[in-house]
Every structure is written in structure tokens, then in C-alpha cells.
Image 1 (cartoon, one colour):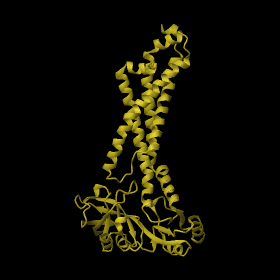
Image 2 (cartoon, rainbow, N blue to C red; image 1 turned 120 degrees about the vertical axis):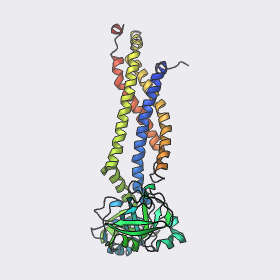
Image 3 (tube, helix red, strand yellow; image 1 turned 180 degrees about the vertical axis):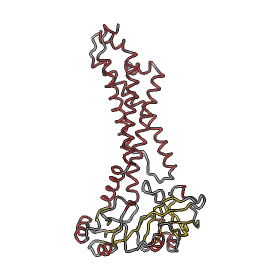
Image 4 (tube, rainbow, N blue to C red; image 1 turned 90 degrees about the vertical axis):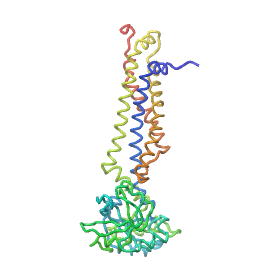
Length: 384
């Protein structure tokens, strides 16, 4: 079996080949990391909703996403309870508190959930433990998300510190822990009763709800209930399904925030970097082998045969650069997950791995096509 000319051209200068592989791998890593952060941005948008016990959501039309909801009248919750097929309609109160690190005394914004302790708002088994239920009912006591950032300080049960809202501070005690994760919307979360929420966010009244949670009976028709709710409820609330609210939050984070723009632009810039790197390598390789290409043309080989050699080199470089880039990206994903204590849902996915492989081949092929002009224009008479 004959060794392909493209491979022989690449291995002829081993140092150049190593540099080329490193360059492609660097571009692959950049693409993987930006796509990973973009994917985690989309996942974090749905992460909260997946752990909330609701099939339909009521929220203000002015809300952009879950951390920027606007309050509406609690009467809408009462109205929803009267619709056929609704098992429960529950209020959820949302807001940011300034949490003081008990060790450094520095304050940092933390996302708080206020719930009626009798409502099964969350699909988190830890909240059903007797210890957590008892702690939740105590005044000035909260449950603390163990996936919160370390900057908030110690997470031990019994820790006492201060939480502030509107410039007013109150003592707060960690009565228990749970596992939730706030993603990009929040670096940490708390769960407290609606009465404690009212105290910390005074003069916030419980007659103003941040989010309405509607849980349907098992035999209820989702579309029918949604249609009926939209008919009977005033225009000061939106009636949206779980799939719809997740999609809207994803669209907001990816399309309307600077974070989504930065990661999306990062993917584009990474591809451009890869194209430039591979082009420089292939152009240099073509230039150094120009006499050989000219000789082949003089022997009667057509330009498409010579072009095929350059394209083959580009594809080989793509595959050789993708493998180490993929391996290093796996390590960086794991490092990122550990650094965020599991709060940032970043992980390798098969679809992403295939997409980046195709992007790498396309990127290198495009570079090969750009560098082909020198081969096509090679004139044996001029070269020699």
C-alpha cells in the first residue's frame, strides 16, 4: 500500500507538523470551551425550572427571566385554583439579598426563594427531611444551597450572619442545606418561608407574587388548561408552559445578554484563528514544495490532482489537531465543573463533539482552498 503524498509532505518537516497540530488543537480547545459555556448558559436557564414542581407558570409580561420577575396580584393564583384540571396553584417569591460572608465580612448578592412551607414547590427530596422542614419554620432561618460559591463563606448548619435588603440588615441562620445550583442567574441560592421572606424584604407584601406555579392533575389536558387560564386571567399575567418558559429564558440568556454574545462571538473568533493558523502552515508547505508540484504539472498531472493533495493535508491536520484538542477540552470541562462546585452545568456532549469535528474539518479545508491558488498558478517554466 502506497503512502499518500499528502502525509509524506506533512511528516517531511516534523517540527512544522507539530506546530500545525498544536495550532489546530488550540483552535479546537477555544471552540469547545466557548460552545461549552454557551451550552451551560442554556442549561442553567432551565436548571431551576427542572427542579420546580409546576406544569404551567404565571408571570408578569414584564419579566425577562426568572431572576428579573415582576410581581403581580396573588388573586391570579386564587383564580387559577378554580380551573378544572388544576391540582395546585402555588405562589413563589423571588429576590436578591446581600449575604455577608461571616469570615471576611464582605457582602455578595444571593438569590432567595420564598415559599409557603405547606406547598410542594420544589422537586428536591432533601427539603422533605424532618430536620429541614423544622428548620424552615424557624424565624430568621434559611436553607442554604450547598452548590453556592465559596465566596459566601462557611456553609455549616448553625452558622449565623447578616442578610440585607434595601439597606436594612437582619440576622440570618443557616438551618439546613439542599442541592440546587443557580447557574448564571445566581452564584448562590436560599430557600425560606414566605413569612421570613416578608421580613427580609420588608415592606414587600405577600399579596404580590413573583411567580405562580400551577400543578395539574395526572388526567388533565395541558393545552386545554392553558387555553382556559389565558381566557379567564387578565393581561397582567402570562400563562406559559414549562417548555415555553425554559425556551424563553434560554433565548434571553443567549440572544439578549452580553454573556451569550461573548461566548457566541468567541466561537466565531476561534474558527477564524484556526483558519489563519492552518492557512499559514499549508501556504508555507505549498511554497516549500512548489518545485515538486511544478514537476508533477510538467509530467501531465492536472491541477485537481494537486489540489486534492493539499485538501488531504488539510483534513489530516484537522484530525490530528482535533484528537488532543478534544482530550484537553474534556479535562478543562472537568476542571471548570470542579471550580464552580458543580454549579455550572458544563459537560461534553456527543452532538457538540461531532459538531466541533465537522467545524475543524471545514476550517482546515477552507484554509486549504485558500492556499490552493499558489498550486494552481504554479508554472513549471517559471519555477525552474
